[in-house]
Length: 495
Image (tube, rainbow, N blue to C red):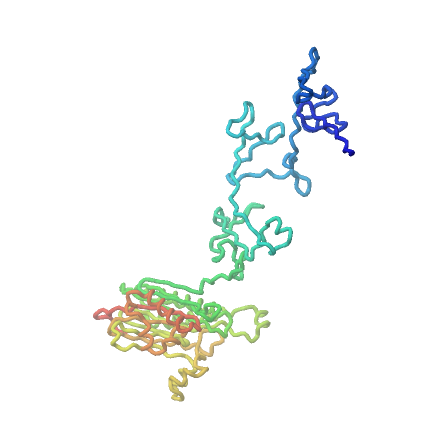
């Protein structure tokens, strides 16, 4: 039977014994010149017919052995200098520690690496110190959650939320006044203008963070102050978008050295324009007037009257605006607010008010009755005073808090109310807006809300009273000042 013809033996390289192709002039593995090599002879490796294999021929002039040529090093992308989009050289990269990267050898080849378990060969350039790569946890994309390319490559999908940029700890203070930052330098963000949420973004003029968009709390949303023996707290409440209340407190001394405490509380009229500015201007003007008049020997009740007049002038000044502004808003009310205040000095308790903010007297001995020391300038108070309605009926009416007296350019007539009292026992004076007394209207209810140690801890007591209003609903701005009334000295002068 016929047989397939036997294939001839594949020739091999005489230097490295790698198989050769027909017509090769050079070995593809070691690169030896095959034309200079002797022809391969058939040297059987087994004994045939019992005869020993012939030995190498004698007296043959063999060509000298040549070492295989070393292949050229592979070309790497990093061997070519990088360029930017316009063909210019890329800037050098600097590590985080500020040191320069190691220079490449003069011959342009990559830095050598030490052989495993041994030092570098003699004359080799030193190995560069390569910083370790940061450890990154592998990201696994579940099958079927992305495109085919993303699934095969295991690429991470975009997160639903992006982490906010952390603040730069190298950012210092702002540029000194009168100096401009150099061109190209990053302008540091002032500490007071940083966002309270992300602590990185700048707060714009509208009160929102430019980085995360978070609305910033206004400075007047919650204010606390402790001044000598008295304290005050003001809070925006739970329903209003801003705090339109303001307060001013202080302490001074009469000409004879007797200490005097001053507290002013103002409530902006929400139906007027810029009520927050009106309350702030009135509280500042009244406080400064009292603190200036009392050391000069002015009677506290006269000083209180003058303080209310000064506050009215300060609020009136806010209505002075260009004629063009009035043309665009002809029906806009002028800035307006109410005011209530107290002076405690030399055994005398003086109160003054315009509007519906109140003053309460709460004795230290809670068995003694408390008292309300002011009368509201309101529709409800007028109904009760005229005998047309009972107090419960009047204050249950929706018109109860319509005020009939206020400070402002469009007020009908300025009628400051002042009164003097001489309590015969120690206690505290509570000066507050209707944001508090709406939740403790009667003197008895207010006395129950005031902590027993109010005279010793006025700031704590003011916080408790504001919390009482917030717990009750916080429908309005809440402001309260707590003024201790010490035991009067024997022989104190009369009013």
